[in-house]
Structure formats: C-alpha cells, structure tokens
Image (cartoon, rainbow, N blue to C red; front, side, top):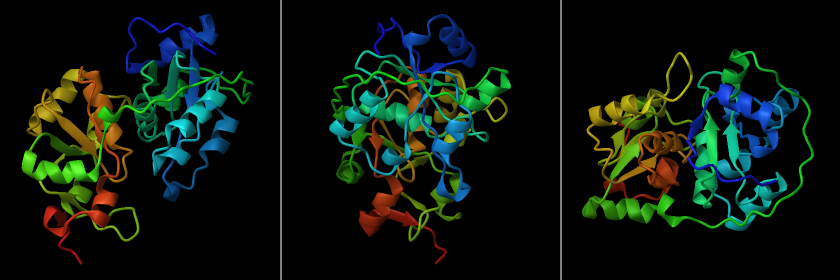
Length: 289
C-alpha cells in the first residue's frame, strides 16, 4: 500500500483526525499498534491487540527492536510485510493507560532512523481513542506486502565514543530522560546488575514531565520549551538524548521535534551500556552500596 506524501506531516495527530481519516480515506494511511510493556507489568501486547485495536491497524512487534536496533534489511523486511512502502503514510500508537504513550516514540524514532519521515504518532494512543468513544476491532486485515528500502540516517544516533569525546569537546548537551531518582542514584534501576546514577555533565529531564498528566497527551511546544529552559538547556543548541536503554529518550526527541528541532540524536546504548562499559572517572553512581 502506498499513498501520496502529505505536504505537511505533523509529528502528532489527534484521535478525531484519525477517526475522520479512517472513515473517509481508509487506504491513505497504515495504522500500527506498536505497544510494548515492561516485563514486570506482565502484559502481552500482541494478545491485547488481538482482543481490541483501532480498526485497520496492524501489529508491529516493538519488543524485537526495543533492546537492540535492527539492521536496515531486518527493519525493511518487517515493515514491508505490514504493507508499508517508502511513500506510505504511517500512523503509530500504543496502548498504555497510565501514560497514553510509551513505546510509540521509540518506533517513531526507528522509522526516522531508517529514513522514513512520512509518519505521525497518535497523541494519547488507544486510551484516548477509547475515551472518545470510538469503536475498536478484533479483525486483522490481510495486507499486500510492499517493498520498503530502509536506509540508515547516521545523524540520528550517537555512540558511547561520541559521549566520551564530548567530555573534552563539549559539542552537545546530553539530556537524560530517566526519573530523577534513577538519575541521582537514589532510586534503583529496573535492570539487573545496573546501579543508578548518571553520566557527568548530563542534564535530567524526566520523560513523564513532557506529558500532560490529565489528558495523557504530549505537552504543547511552549510548555516543552519552558521545561528545557528551566533545566538550563538552550533547545536551539545541539542536544543528544539518552535514558536507560534508548526507549524513553525518544520522548525527548519527539518533544524537541514538536518545537521545530528536527535533529536530536539518540545515544542508543544509554545508561545500561555506559554503566557496563564507561570509564569509572566519567561515571556518577549511587553512594548506596
């Protein structure tokens, strides 16, 4: 399936816009349920999709791509089988009743990393869709496979070597999207054998602070800018985002994108990789042993 590239693709779309689009031009978009839940929640995203999803949606198995970024060939094969070509307009959402969004920003970043910019996130996800009273479906449409040629965009990712070099070069601000407790070393990491703490010179902006706690949608751009400014960050200057494993950092990237800053690289290995491989003198960990 393919569709004309819209003249202006917004990073976020509303549930009312998607409902109208599916009612009037259902073949103009490909909708993906990209739900992924942290293992401790003991939720099965694929099973929940089978029981209830937005009509016309396909299931994108985000679990396969959360902890390790796929190759271009792997990503192209997966999305091609979902009926997505290089000019398909993709709408992604997830099903997280607490936040409204969780894994969708990571999948949004993945598509962009593989040079597909023709996509948007459903703001508020499935919970917002249900809140509006819109119907769901248990039917999974058969789709015609498309050819998706994935090409990596190296400007959207940074490595541990880039982070270490920045201690001297000071070319960007490293922004950490984890909770304040994990960042400061006063709360435990959810990963085995990883202590909490942060990389020297990193600035903390917890990703949940970018979400409206009542509406479960992303904050408007002016509020995002204020949060960054209050943290001492000039959003107009180079920023690199990180978190625990490269998932919630994508909220920071998305938030910056809504403010017009389209290139914020992700330190994909994030704290888990850095803790295991970083030099001790460049590491701040909890004093609690």
